[in-house]
Length: 236
Length: 121
Length: 70
Image (cartoon, rainbow over all chains, first blue to last red; front, side, top):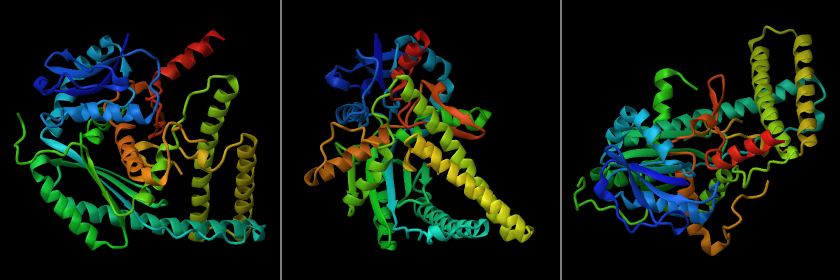
């Protein structure tokens, strides 16, 4: 029998027994040492990426957020009880560190769209020589270098706006795309109103950019300990 | 209990944007890279490998192009060398195009998402 | 490539709920604690993390079983 693991919590009192999980199954607490995992029994071998399953997963993890800050498992974590026990005992110190890092916080998201100029494809059928081929590539590259500079600038600008207000950030930039930046900010709960004000001001500051704000979320982007593990030991 | 009642969290995460359509369009691209199921017949496994291999080759090919342009700009290549280099890369691009067609893969198919690092290409 | 979300109804009036679904998916997929770490394939310093591979971790295992039997 497999279990679907939703999240890991350190405050066992935060759990509400009436919570429903994936496929409407009852969620229960699996205690492992002083921590606990919110699990449901799961009958199949695969977890389909459907609206229902994604929302069920999210709402289970969300259900404890009022009382404690959980470490969410990645969607689709199907394991046996034994695997969970091994995983947790083997990584206890790293998990404790993670809990300490996210304790009292939530995740707030920022996504930014900016218009990109289309690279004009020069008349391709005129490129017959190796030299003009390379020259065309050079033109394309100059365009993308510019976009990379723009993306970095937006990243720095955003960081400067939240500096001091956030405990941590995870930022991805995609210079050649419209959705140029996606950021997750780890914010102490008490600072949320201030954070929101800061974001509202930031948005006014850059009318040429389109913003999407969402939150509060459980700390999905800050839960994974493997990232930490990799930076320390260079393991891939 | 950790949290003060002055800062209750909303029931659901709030989403705030003036550009819902645009963001829907962009976010759909992210989720579209998910396979809906893994097909385990031989042909599908083969296509999966082809995709991986071609993506890596495409990645390297683009690096080579960048390097070639830098060398060209650096001024240490003769006109003949530039022409040779350009022709070779042009052929490589053409060959990749053929392979993509052979396997029925589009440019979007060859764009692996590397998570925190962003898309491969 | 067809969309994986056959069960999602896409129409104008559902746009804001589609947005909230997409935002939710962006958070729950590809983030969070990973138990099946061995699915990561690395080339030099680049991790080729296939989105959804952990989601389908069980079906990948099943695929391996089937291929072994052949």
